[in-house]
Length: 387
Image 1 (cartoon, rainbow, N blue to C red):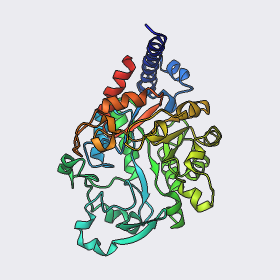
Image 2: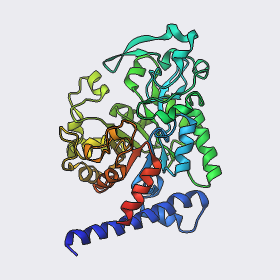
Image 3: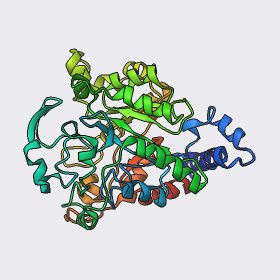
Image 4: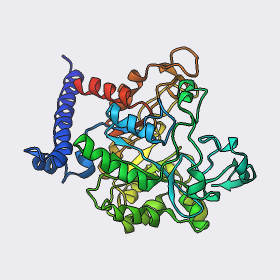
């Protein structure tokens, strides 16, 4: 056996031990299992560090199988075994409620276009510098939004999901928090969620600040502590800094392409790009107010012009050195979303070799991953931990 193989086996053994302890810590906290406290201590006091690793995060629920950000999608993610459910992307209504939608523009995720009573609400707005046409949550009251039903956002890739169009309404964040408690009781183990503040600078300028509303609800339900089962995330570091002053929850800064700038940086005239934030200096700054980062997978392993993976960057090691965990996004099973060498055929709705891609990403040492297909991710994790 070569040294490289031996090292790989040792890492696999360590990761299996880590997973076992993490499962005990997470389950024991709810079930009162013997040894739960010890497991939590090994993971730095429990909380988010007690989650199994690599952590499988159900991206917008189980959006590979159901229209995203619906209770149908969230529920299925738990049924499939996701460790955490991304419930949800938070945007406000006209009357100040927080609802779960991928974007404030809802023409592609609801049946609003089929409602003649809302035809005059269609408009064009500038959203983070981009002209966007459609219907926006901030132009509807919660009661009006509740008359709409969710539809599949990417039917070309997921035609089977259209079977469920019209079945579920738009959930509110408060409903999600109640659902979380209900599911925790029913399942006998703590259910975790991973909500995101969407376009917080845009909404603050409209007088609909997100962070205070999020904090208020978390306090109401007793979920605003450092060990609370709610991880908060945002693409705007300023939003995470604001949340850090309002709640004790674990926080993560989302990071897009290296050459982009967070929109709050654009508005404030901060010249830094994502490339600056993933340097050791940038990561140290993030670690002063957050516990993790959610980078795009391309920041972990870049692709060449043909869409093939190249060599991993040093981001995983650099982030860990700064004390940050990494939960990159997003793994999907369908061909167009996979690196070129893992695609199988050319059909836009066909699955490629997702297991092969998961293996490559897990080998970089990431702490978890957002996936539209939690069941695939869990099988891939099992394969990886077996070494």
